[in-house]
Image (cartoon, rainbow, N blue to C red; front, side, top):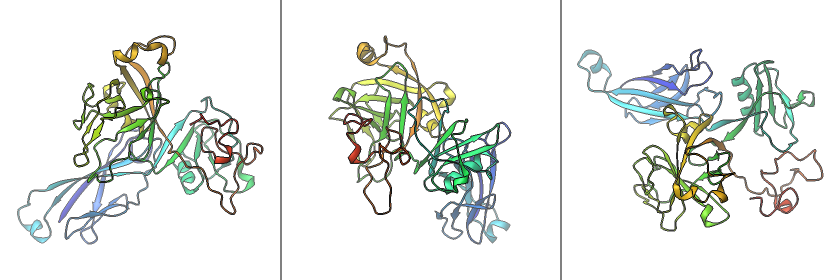
Length: 379
């Protein structure tokens, strides 16, 4: 074989971008001996020189400034070797390989209103850039939040590791929340639409059928509600979603219906509930708003169906908003189960703030399900 590849790393600050933060083409090298395809000396994947099979575990260093970093490699694969070097070249077969990081960094503005949380911040003097600060957080298994101040070049991470002398106060800059195992198949998205309570909330990926032979092009997302009228399903109008009357490429938000159906062979879905709204990027360049959310935070426009705005007193603040409604779409961490008691582990209590490190809206054990500020209706 003879292989030539070029890669594009998703835009953002870093050495894969130009000074303006725009992605630039990165050459990849392929070895005829080992089949390794490398980016700046680091293994991306392997194209077997004999069979042409693609495999390998990436060992790339491409930290995201925010969101999730990905590498899209475009390769041309042709039968080569000695005959290729002296004879006529055969037609090359195009090959596209997409490698996505399993960690996402979600912006959390420092000015965001939230309940006070007791955290232990550790100052990292060796991290002089945002990428090195995030890398330091990734090294700590229990690090969930990192913050970097551009003015002071100070890095702070939320972790229980390190020496007591490294303890610091909450940094003034915006925080980045670490989402481990970040993927379309497992990560929820949060829609924030001020003044439009109907669609605000967390939408989580619907578990695909166990017999599905291949993943769908886009995930179906669901959101629970206190009653059937508040339960929604959201899908992308991509040619494999039938029922919604929304423009192609937008996300349709529909009421859940008992007759909703998904074909386990083709992964095509039929939604039979009433249409709630159509959601699209605020500008044509935004494209798929859910994919944009994986790059940080996406700005969206939500156009409600007339059937929904007629019930304005129940779901909208003050009065029915003008269509479309401006909204923000961001990633949300996965829900975690109640912790089990284990030897050697210390659990927080509502009476001892020194051990308490979770926001009231995060995980609580069964013993505290009915203790303020947690109530049975909190979920």
